[in-house]
Amino acid sequence: NCPHCLHAITGTPEFCPFCSRILPAVADRSPYQVLGYEREHLNVDLQDLEKRLFELSKRFHPDRFAGKSAEEIQYSHDHSSAINNAYRILKNPISRAKYAVERELGSIEEKSASVPADMADLFFEVHDHLDTIQESNGNPPADALKAVEHAETELREKVRGLEKNLKEKFDR
Image (cartoon, rainbow, N blue to C red):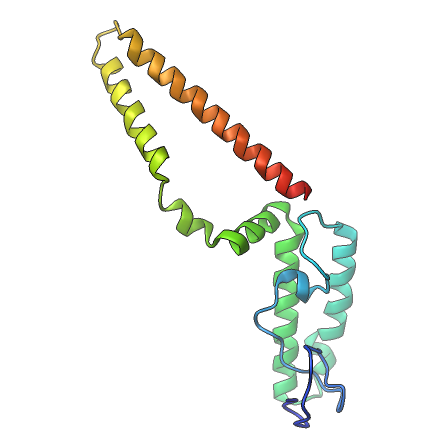
């Protein structure tokens, strides 16, 4: 319901269709939704993004609501803040990708705090070989050197695969 005229409202309009007053910002909208995009995509036209920012900023700028109620002024601040935050995320390709990844998989910080079991096993295996090489007094065993080289090759292939997968997702 509209907090001003109490009419029932369907959808998520920004202004009440009955009394035309500003409505509260919807909290759980994505940056794409805030800026009026119909779908999420990693490749964003920066000129279009900036145009959307300016149009929405003018529409919701708190100065436009200076003579209104404290409630309406707060709603305009909330809309403006959501618009600026959405723009900040979408204008930068790194933050845009981070947003997409975190929306799909959860917090990167939380995920990076744990190491996948296969990577932990590889790390400890390589560490053991490096200890053997270091303790060899300049005459390292060939099998230890070969194992470290194999691990390096395996890691490079894994990184290439991840980069290819990421590029495919960006393209899509």
